[in-house]
Image 1 (cartoon, helix red, strand yellow):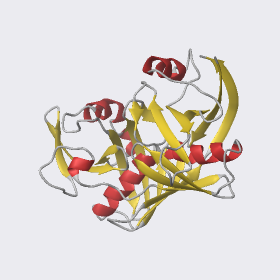
Image 2 (cartoon, helix red, strand yellow):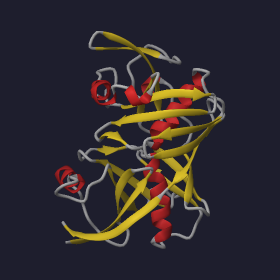
Image 3 (cartoon, rainbow, N blue to C red):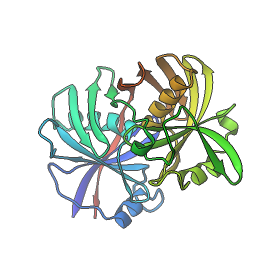
Image 4 (cartoon, rainbow, N blue to C red):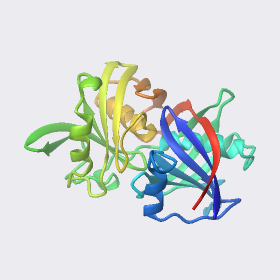
Length: 276
């Protein structure tokens, strides 16, 4: 079968995007892993699928697969690319696009400068909703890794995140500590791990070790989770610029019960086709 796809990226977090409204395909985990391979496949951090909605108030269904073939609940950088993709492909002319995800509904707003603002919804802070093993909700939680104590923030943005403060992200042990926290038994579904350097009340730097993909150049939900954790710890004001290795995101959050708003670019790299 000949499959048409588009390669896109949001701040270097790269995606294979497939329209499953005008064509049909099913992906097994081993196929996703093969396609994700940067030497023998197309190469990407996540596979994004555009499907017809199953909920009456949604315009599309948005599904995400990590490079290891696992399906995940949400991807913020992918959501921005999703919005640009469905408009570029004339699947919609709307600027406000409602999508359903496994992590809950998202509202995408396409801007004139090829950037997209995503209403990521309100963060989930109850441990059972993240999910995270803890007796009660707290601003930070102790986590023991290889006998060492770390204080982390735990947030769900439709997918689970642990946020760890570091003095300098360039020297942070992302590749060494990231996978150990990702698979920590206190996170029964695994977790994305953010290493956050606070520069000021309106600016920070972030690296993210993504569950199922490893460190990526950017992570939209990770940036939102870092913002939320920073506000709860009284490090940030309600609007923050976060610098990731692939570029910059603007994040706004007014506090518990309010949605997180994320604005950043979405870039189409090329269109292609492949036999699967």
